[in-house]
Image (cartoon, rainbow, N blue to C red; front, top):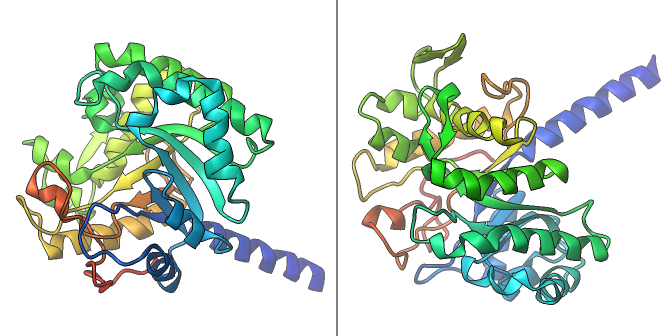
Amino acid sequence: MAIKLLLVSLLINLLVFTDAQSVGVCYGRNGDGLPSEQDVVTLYRNNGITKMRIYDPNQPTLQALKGTNIELMLGVPNDALQSLNDPGTANTWVRDNIQNYPDVNFKYIAVGNEVSPRNENSQYVNFVLPAMQNILNALRAAGLDNRIKVSTATYTGLLVNSSPPSAGAFYDDVSGFIEPIIRFLAQNNLPMLANIYPYFGYLGDPNSNLQYALFTAPGTVVTDNGRQYSNLFSAILDAHYAAQAPLGGENVEIVVSESGWPSEGGREATIDNAGTYYRNLIPYVKGTSGTPRKPGRSIETYLFAMFDENRKSGDEIEKHFGLFSPNQQPKYQLDF
C-alpha cells in the first residue's frame, strides 16, 4: 500500500509539474531602457516563468540562460533564412548558437516568423522549408534532434477563414507554401508553431464580442458541428487545426508561439482588458480540457510579451503588449 501511495504521489507531482510548464513568455528587445539580459533571466526565475521565446540568437541572452533550465524557443530571423539554405551555414549556425551552449535548455528552433506569400515577408517564402531541413539535419549530425524540435512560426493571417472553426482553411496562394512544411513536420514528428491573437480576431470580426475574446462569456457562444466554443482563443486554434488537417497535418500538434492583449493604443486595448485576458488565458492553457476539436490536452502557449517595446515599427498598439514595464514592475498580477 505504501508503494502504491508513493507511486500515486509521484504521478500527481508529475502532472502538476507538466501542467506548470505549459506557459512561457516571449522576450523581445525592441525597447529603450530595458533591463540587462541577466536581470531579465532573473525576472523570469523570480516570477516562476519556465519558458522563454527569443527571436534571434542573442549571445548575452544565451549566456544568461546557462544553467537555469529555462526552456528556450530560439528564433531564426527571417533575414537569415536564405543563408541557411546552405547546409554548411546551417551546420555552423547550430554549432555557434546551440552546441556552444550545452548548459542552455533549448526546446524549439523557430525557423522564421510569420512568413507568408501575402505579407511583407513574402520574399522569404522559398527559403523557409530548406532552412528547416538543413537545421534539422545539423541537429541530427550533432545528436540533438531528439531533444530540440524544429518548426516555423505561422499566424492566423494565413487563413482565408477561421469562423466557424471547422471551416478553417488556408488561402489558395498560401497552400502551396505551407503544405510541404506541414508534411515535413508530420514526417518528423515536429509541432507547428502559431501566433494566435483573439484581440485582432475580435477587431476583425463584426459578429464577435468582447466577452468571447476575453474568456468571460457566461456560456457557449459558437456551436460548430456539435462542438461548443465559449472563447475565441480555442476557436482560432481549432481553425488552425482544421486548416492543416487536409494538408497532412491532422496529427501535427500546434504550439501557440505568441498570444497577448495590448494595454493601450487601440480599441479595447486597456490595462483591465489585457489583465483579464492573461488571467484567464493562463489557467485555460494550463488545464487539461484542451479545445473542442482536440480535447484532453494542455496547450503549450507563449505570452507576448515580457516588456513594452517602444521601438517596434507599425501601429502604436504594437508597442504595448508587455507584461512588465522596462523598470521590471508588473502591469498585472499574474500567477505563472
